[in-house]
Amino acid sequence: MNTHADKTQENKSHSHANGVSQMQSGGESTFQFVDNRPEAVAQRKLQEMANNSPQTKQAAQLQAMANGYSAQQQQTIQNKPNSYQPLTLLRNKNEGKEVAQLFSYQSINPIKGVPMSVRVEDSGTKLTIIDNTQTEQNVGTLNGFIDYYIEGDELKLDHFEAHPPGAGLGTLLMFELSQVAVRQGISTIAVNTPALSAMGAYKAFGGKPRNEEQHEEYKGMYLSAMQNDTEIHKRMVNEEAEAYAESEVYKEKYFNPELGSVGEGNLFIGAKGDYKNEHSGDEDYERAADLKALSAQLIYNSSELGSKTGQSFSKKWNVV
Image (tube, one colour):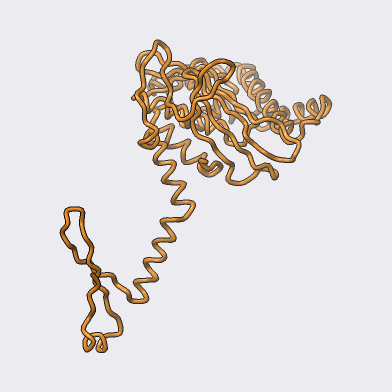
């Protein structure tokens, strides 16, 4: 029922409020005032625009995912030796094996004009990137995977690859891995024998030592060894340089599949040389010793990993 303000009172005021009577579920009537002053109406419209903005919707999606996905996606998870039953949204048959399809993602900003699109599948021991990109450009295939298993109260990351680099696929996979752990109530993700060449990326995801005191001890030992024998540092940097050069070749081949062996070789040699030059001085010993020590006991907190990677990939990917 609408109420009407007294005409005399209305004429004395430059603005007025309309009362709106509403029925609650219990049948009782409640009375609410709606402020129709121009400035109040404008404020409500601005709030509605903010609530409906893509950024707000994206943040809400990511929050739902980080909290273990939305209510309708929750299912009972059964523990198995070294494995688990993954969260099920849609089930596909992949080479005769049943896998769980998780979320699909669309790149926010196309890279070199390519509107990248992927989905993630989970077999219970492996997260896999499936390329859904549709484009008329001649490009390669987006791919990546993480092999993992559960042992005791920890999730073990056994192997990790993502190509091409720079597309955000690695961040996407690490986010999904964090959610596997969170859904299982597991707080620690441990990386098995990580490659030294990949330690920079692992640390960028928020990797930390299992034992900080022991890490500092190992770091000091490696630093001293590198200072006494420069070849130790050179070998590590050479390994990193080769991995970096390979990633640059992968990246170029994605956008230029017809690069050819000569082009690949030239690119590899150039990228490797650039990396070695950048990390050749003794001022790099500290960084190298830190990564070397971290590789011996690299772990993540699953919630922290989910928060860090979620914030990062939300700048590159939309959930679709």
